[in-house]
Length: 472
Image 1 (cartoon, helix red, strand yellow):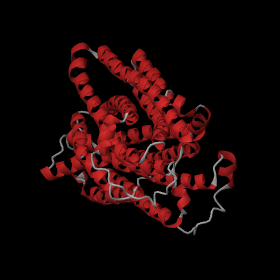
Image 2: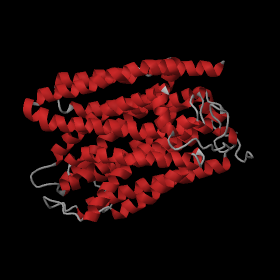
Image 3: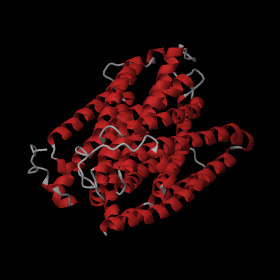
Image 4: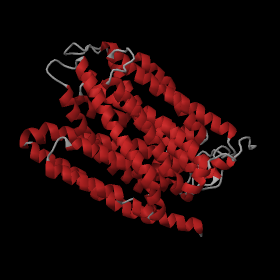
């Protein structure tokens, strides 16, 4: 590709202060901007999911919805593997963005939000409307598997261990900045007088349209990058530009096979499993807390929906702000000075401390602070460290196995955790009381912390071993 875009104005500040070369700068700009837009969109729809789905169908349906998501993503993993055998990774990201824009446009106008009678104690839905609500839940869950997973496959494939240490923290920081801005915007829309003349239902629709628009911009950005940036920007660990890579057919089941026969891939799977198992328990407790505050005997009236939305988005804004500060000022320094191997231990250690404090204090309000801190740590440090593990792997691991891991590990852990949540609420809490229920929560999360730390130890050794093999 001829270099129609020169590197002369790539930013002296980044080169001097952040030690980035010209190529690394453009890698950061592309990945950072794409992740900024994807997470901005996800921040909006994720909290809409937490508001709309329980308001229509009840929060008790969430565990079932997580299980259905897991089952639906198993065939989706095979479809993804089929596409990987036939298109480049950059093209795959374009395809998924385009699909999500189209589905998002339908959801923006097809969600039966007008059926949410804010003065009624019961929402009445047709079969088709109920199906649309369930489809919306799956649509939002698909962000992490199809969009974020494919984005990181794209980013990992244009990176090497050195550039990852220099840029991954800033990439995550850009996404947190986007999430923070959209969360603040949504919070302001529901909690102040700048509602622009929209009703509560109108505000929900407006946020949905904004989320889809952000994905459409991301689609346009990646097209421009592929069209105008030189091929060196898209070269990674294997020194082949993904815009010029040859697509090889290795079979749709190869990603699943690698998960069970490759210990390195299985180790990443365990890390993801532990991370999301703990986060899901904390998130469920958080949703119960804010729904108990928002719901009264008269159902979900207008004031309660507004309170629920403003509370949810304000919490997300604090979490994104914390994650932005950590990822921008801390993450890169840790990766460069203590390395990936030692960084793997930081998040599970803090998680263990956090859940222990939650148990010792017994304060329900603490769950909000625990949610904010755990998610901020995971997004700002856990994600870039974990994604660095993929950099030293081959194409099938970066794309096929990664999709299987993100589809199965994330959703399996969430389904398992939701099963625990259901059992804890329905049996342990009602039979033994709050203290024993809290103890069960603590034992569940600390058990996963212990597994997490063991997996981090072995994955750190394996990562350094792969780096030494490449150097030799």
